[in-house]
Image (cartoon, rainbow, N blue to C red; front, side, top):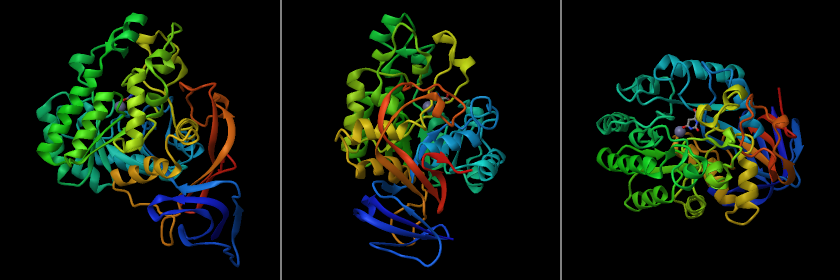
Length: 430
Ligand code: DOR
Ligand code: ZN
């Protein structure tokens, strides 16, 4: 079926496009991009006043299926993704069972094909059961469609083991994504070590617990040549290390979350809000500023959510007993538009690099470009829409957002995956 998308401001820095123009789509691909297009038969959508960009990709999402469907499942998580403007997510393997073999990869792919509302890119564990002791079946998982490897939620504690992970993965041209956490320093840490841990009277999670593993993994990247991606970077010194690694020409990339950019340890007040308990923890104002500088100057490659849904009964507990994590799929785009784009910190082209182009490149996915022949995955944005973050509007099963009550400007209204609408006027197309 033919689809005509008319009158949107279409932006794609990959093809140096930023103008009001029409798109003709057929059989899941772009056929033509030009002014005043017309067609014989098909569906026509008027997108006047909207912005159309290559479909956004969130490369760090916990869909929780199999095993933790009480928190989220592939049906609800991919609906939340589409509602947030995403055409694809990369699912983390810390499910139950852990995705550390081909059967797990096939399960996630099959469920996503059955019930998904966006593309699901499957990542597999680096080590069996995320225990950091035995290599996972990486080759088998790649043969069954895994795109990347990570023990997210855990740092690989043993440096020799991490070297073996990178040595093994390097033969496949796949990225190893690392959650940097040295347990011997982090221990029972709950919040950033320093002012916050002292003020709140809780064990500290020191910046050095993250930075030591970043430094080690960059060194091991140099040793092995394996592409390395630092997940949810949070500290100024971490950004500096990635900057230096890139200057040296190492294949190192990194990502940042909206919560680490737009919230800080100062937001954790004496109500002990467990929605702000995340791993790694919210850091200082100076760290958040350095993260935004890294986004602006290109040191940070991607914005991701680390969407980490939990049930109310898990989060409504004492801070120390509550699990780490906050959801993010349905607020990420609005937060980035409000805090970075509308305020002039970055332009749309840079936002597209961070949220669409780089994630695909890092995950070795085919690029989506606004030109004839490309896959028809698009995100349509209303840049002026004012809205308030409320749990009532979430498609996620979970409500553990640190941004409830925030006033934002800009959101996704329509999303197309392979030429089919998954979101129309802000509602999921069932
Ligand atoms: O806050 C987090 N939650 N950080 C992680 O690394 C894991 C995640 C989870 O799985 O809940
Ligand atoms: Zn993580």
